[in-house]
Image (cartoon, rainbow, N blue to C red; front, side, top):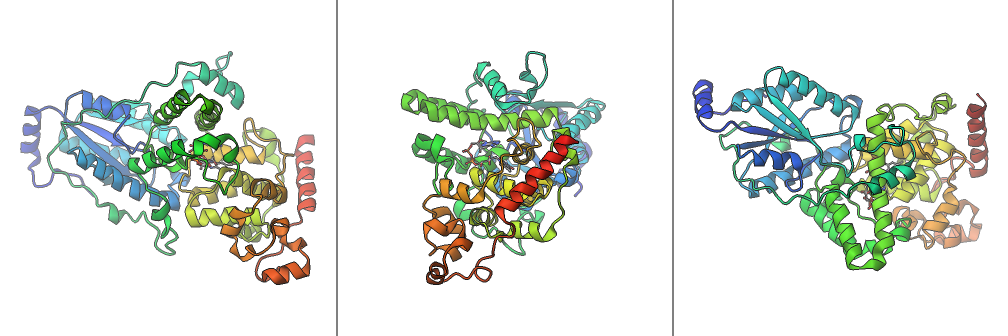
Amino acid sequence: MPLSATGIDPRGFRARIWSMQTPIIFWYRQDLRTHDLPGLAAAAATGRPVIPCYILDEHAPGEWATGAASRWWLHHSLTALQADIASLGGSLLLLRGETLGQLQQLLAATGADTVYCSRQYEPWAAALEEELHEQLSATDITFKRYAGSLLFEPEQINNQSGLPYKVFTPFWRHCLKQLAPAAPQALPALTNWFTAKLDSDCISNWGLQPTQPDWAASWPQQWQPGNNGARDKLSAFLNNGISNYSDGRNHPALDCTTRLSPHLHYGEISPRVLWHAARQAAAESPALDGQVAKFLSEMGWREFSHHLLHHFPTIPEQAFKAQFRNFPWLPGADRLDAWQRGQTGYPMVDAGMRELWHTGYMHNRVRMIVASFLTKHLMIHWREGAKWFWDTLLDADLANNSSGWQWVAGSGADASPYFRIFNPITQGKKFDAEGAYIRQWVPELAAIPDRYLNCPWEAPEEILRTAGVVIGEHYPAPIVDHKAAREAALAAYASIRVA
Ligand SMILES: Cc1cc2nc3c(=O)[nH]c(=O)nc-3n(C[C@H](O)[C@H](O)[C@H](O)COP(=O)(O)OP(=O)(O)OC[C@H]3O[C@@H](n4cnc5c(N)ncnc54)[C@H](O)[C@@H]3O)c2cc1C
């Protein structure tokens, strides 16, 4: 849609603008908040009229175009941001199209001469920032990007040789030795908004929400995208989950983690807010020290993933460890399909895949189990799993997803060793001992006693009959035998170690 100041003659408009202060554009990206946002605060501090805008550019990310679940989140997150900005007296401008062209039209239409934004770390996003810098500065437009999505910028953390870290523990130790992240900034005094009316898209025309099937129908009961929803999740965590985080975070039936990942991905809450809230909790209650340290170290994995993506931008596509580029991955459309649909015959794996489909989320422990199953039991390439997660996770994040998959597959930096093959049966018995998680997501097995819940095919006929389960009819037989699959995976691994 061509952008113009509606109903205003461009020449007269420009003359009027020049007699006022020159406006400044704040280009929103994955930073959909108003508080603790350095770029927005800097724009407000100029005292010039601020034009907040979001551009839906579906070309820039290439094959990493926003996945279906994440598009649902984006719709609601932008709606929440529109309301937040409106409550401050402003109006979020929504534009759609190629970013450079849209910004150039907006600059021309408003007489603005400056664009501020927050930095992003995806290779496509970093390349876009370079392009904008080059093209806009060639026409005397100031383009500035600000930090705001991480606790520590990737360039800030180097090992003794001045190189990026490839191992988490020394990386995080080094981070903890830095000056603590600054306290979150208060909401800037946003009193001077650009008020001339501009043609804004209507978010309902962007088709971000799924329709056929509408698999997001139940999500609003569980998720509230936007800063208010993020703050509620943080409060719930500080009041409850944090006291048992270290151990509880491994048990998918417990509610011990924050579930802030999609809020963090879209920047609705800053990591600094979480850092300081967690530190504050430990200061008030020293018994929480260990839990808080564990929580911050999980935030540290987020930092590490972004550090890796920044320094090794091929990690979404290519094995970090070169030997894994020759790994004999197997084709297997049917098996991939069974995995995606939660029909592998391994209850813990199926529970996770169904949780993902129904809620747009999967517990971290279960992400590791299902990813190990795909890459080791089925020997299907980790990229297939990463692509499915990309489309179905509300928190789909290029840095965390790529490094999570490579970590499990064994091909990543500081990865879990390939020979660590999660046993889906013992993992279920250990981390879902009472079977609450499996019974929730695989209800056809609800009446199977705990002892056989993770391996129903081993249950005696009578137990199956009493539970009303016929294996192969109500619930699938295992699509691979655990022991044989494990041996095949180890043999494949030996082949690349020798090569
Ligand atoms: C195969 C695989 C794929 C993954 N894909 C994603 C993804 O696309 N997006 C995503 O945000 N996370 C991903 N993770 C990491 C992790 O599973 C989620 O961040 C976590 O489950 C989110 O739940 P939470 O917010 O309750 O976490 P909490 O335990 O409350 O942790 C707080 C925050 O720390 C960060 N975090 C926690 N664990 C990790 C981790 N292992 N790696 C990186 N950051 C972490 C997240 O931002 C999280 O919101 C993946 C993990 C695996 C094994």
